[in-house]
Image 1 (cartoon, helix red, strand yellow):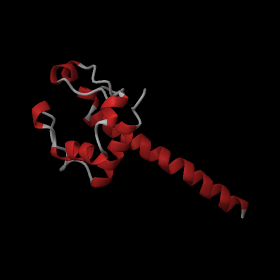
Image 2 (cartoon, rainbow, N blue to C red):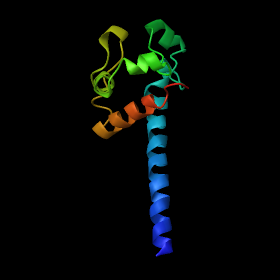
Image 3 (cartoon, helix red, strand yellow):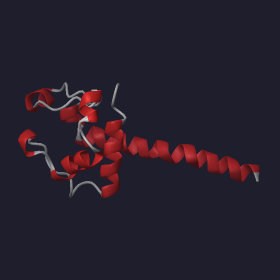
Image 4 (cartoon, rainbow, N blue to C red):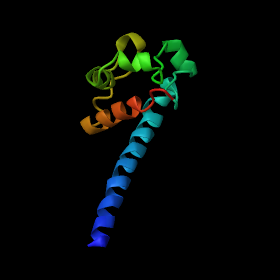
Length: 106
């Protein structure tokens, strides 16, 4: 019984950590070139496109999760951000939003 409980607890800790790692990997592959690994947007392309600083609480508070999901899936024309609807599954988009929310205050 103790082994089963230990296994359940381990899964409860490990699975979310693996999902977060996947989200960070997706961010690094698809977003970091403009938004930076840290989400501050202090990259050559990010500064050119005037991307938002996702570590800024005011920026985060001004957007809903639905707005972030829409920007990821449909792109942002005025910023020339590509759409990822054909490149990311719905759960990956949600994971990306969760990752972005984790940048707040860093």
